[in-house]
Image (cartoon, rainbow, N blue to C red):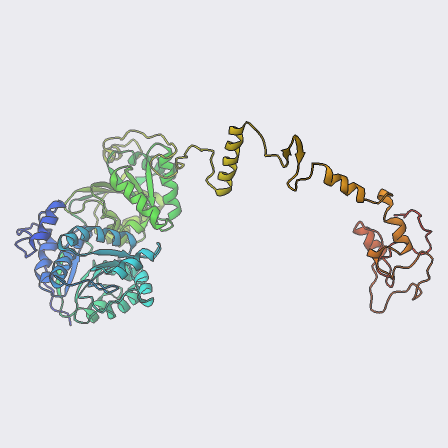
Length: 560
């Protein structure tokens, strides 16, 4: 039964982490990470979560929900597991995430805090080999950050047991519902300790999330900061009306030319990849992020964008949640999304954690009605502006123009060929090494070319068996019949060739069956033989080995 929500609408924090009851070691770790003061949702939830109470946290994207559950997760597990030895395959803390990118970033947020408390963290998700995940679970970990699918697989295989989980967290529960993960989430949560503390953070409670809350959270305290889908105050929205597709392409290229980080959202994976390659080819290094990429490629592209190696990220909605990169100044909806929730989550890649940012939506005339309806549902009030690539509103969004980077092999951005290493000309295979050693030895001894098959003994060439070269060939010539090429003909025709058998009859011997075919035998026509380019087949009933026609004198030529 849900308790009456305890809602807070705090916009300015008044307490420090230490005053909220956070252990000193974790406070020091937060200060080292550049997070000395709590955000409103953290200040609101920490008193309840640190006390072991089940909590339902609701807030807009970018409000700081990750730290709101990471701090109590690490603090309480550090106290519960103090002095205890880790048990293989049995974690004590569990965080469920809908996407691999979000799981990776949650783990990156938790790890500095966990290190301060002597706890180990690992991630579990699909798209990569599970061998590392098996080894980590076998060696023993304290906190697992996982996506539901791969975690269920490891549970079925016996690599993960959740009966000792004392704190479990569901992050972005509404997004897991959108992806159809709630049945798996239900099975996973059922495998945890029934007395465990459970924290659920979600923007909304629709699509079945409310059923998860009612089933697994015991008397939860609800904390809400801002409306679930409220727009960010420090986010400025712009709606650019564009005449045609060519002008839209020019505006996209212009908006991408700025020096600050910016994210461009596309509807399809193909278009995201295509745009990233086009920008890189035009001197604006860009990387793509979408579902067709392997996990290694996703990590590599996201790392290039986070480090500043490239400043443009072209993504589909896979990056609309959980991808938190600092100092993203501009989000561009190249293709407007299908629903208002996706618009808010896309836009949430900027103006995070109190920072400001701009959001631009590009609208063709054919998209006007759908786009205006979308913005109305998202509670965004903005007036369309008809622009071109040289219009003042577009130039204002560009800001400082970054220098162009010519495409080159091994250069930043997708579309550049990988850097080719100069060929050494040396294969490292065993056979190649043996041949190379043999050539070097011959070069030292003064010989060249392929090794000789003979050796000289006493000035005369000799073979491996010791006989002089040519002796074997002479013996073979002496063994040949004197009649040379005629050695087979007469013997074959007389029937005394032992290799042809004793049943070969002479030229004038009568046929035993009158020349007719044997019973059950088939006879191929001359046409078939000619069609296949061969001589007529031997009539059935002839003794094996007899090739010439009956009645042909011995030694007569064969007509073809």
